[in-house]
Image (cartoon, rainbow, N blue to C red; front, side, top):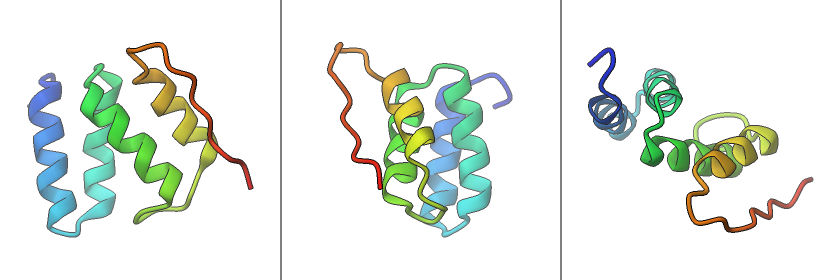
Amino acid sequence: ISNNSGAQYEYASFLYNQGEMTEALKWLERSASLGEVKSELQLGVLYLKGSGLKRDVGKAKKWLEENNTFGMKIFVEEE
């Protein structure tokens, strides 16, 4: 699991569904740092919504832009 981004994403999803947000975020960030696009997208959405963590528009934009494989513009409304 240490270098398998897909397995890390699946484990993070399991932890998230169990309500273990802190541990899930740790594994999502590990997975995303290895280029797992599902993790990048999920992190972007979680940071944008502030779901289970402090809302952070900067981090949301970072992960959503990292995930932007289709060349779309990312518009995030700042507070």
